[in-house]
Amino acid sequence: MATTLLGRQSVNKLRPLLQQFGQKKVFLARGGKSYEACGAKAVLDAIFKDEAVAVTEFSSISVNPHYDEAVDGVRRLKESGAHVIIAVGGGSIMDAAKLMRHIAAEEGYYAILVAVPTTAGTGAEVTRYSIVCRDGIKQSLQAEDMLPDFAIVDSQFIDGVSGYLAACTGFDALAHSFESYWSRNANAESRGYALKAIDLLWKNLPALVKSPTSVLADAVSEGSYWAGRAINVTKTTAPHAFSYAFTTQCNYPHGHAVALTFPYFFGLNLSVDDPLVERLALDKNTSLEAQMRQYLNGIGLHYTGCGTHDLVDLLSQVNLQKLQNNPVEMNAERMKQLETSISI
Image (tube, rainbow, N blue to C red):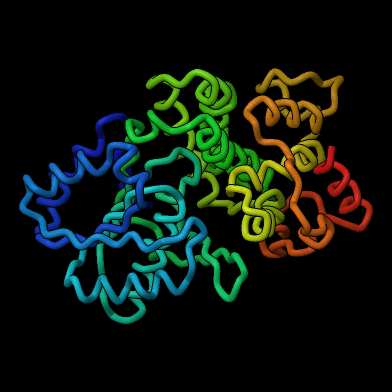
């Protein structure tokens, strides 16, 4: 498990880490404009300057990262001579950096990986998965050496995000926690993490989207971390399995894409008698699917169409590996129900 430094201003602990590593070269995988806009550039530039660290920056990473980009990153990493990778950004940056470290290790080039998320949602800083596009298909790759060595979860970097971005990334984290909770692979450990995440995210996420404060950002950031810990044990389930085509072909951001099918699976996978229903103060006499749809509408994550793409075709491009983790199996009747649910 990654060593985690959690809490506001925790990025300052990067200084003693760099001293501990004894390395004077760093390979920085970062976002584009967001890197400066979120405040990370100013903070990290000061740290690198104080520690006299030579930095090679790599920002050629797409919103939906491509395998070839990671391969190019490995080439740049080797050329830099750095054996410390610091990934600063959202899930795309995390996934690309994790894959770079993995590919480099397979080629005999080893590096320490430090993950510094600047969005609260993916939990990628504490998982052994990398979501990338390869041959036009979005894939989930897994390897133990994709798990970062250190995760620095500092909520100051999400203070200025837009309401929509907060909704997309924050709901991705909430989806992780629910999906881990009901996964076929769930155990006492993963459910403990999932419930911590749900308690932090369920009420605080809508509040953050509407009226952001540092206290709410702290809570959602920590919730994302625990949700990441949960799916690192269980993996995700049906909502994530159906989400990829909506992102790659319809340009829905990942969290929004997951939200499209989530109400249906929330109603399918949870019984009204599940303790979680009472924990969330849901109405047992009202459809759970309808209540989740209302929650998502409240944070702006509703279905806005798919252009010329056929909905049935998009749903047929499901990730079967993730679908197998779902507690309820899909059949033709349920697929039709799912299609109808999205369009409501």
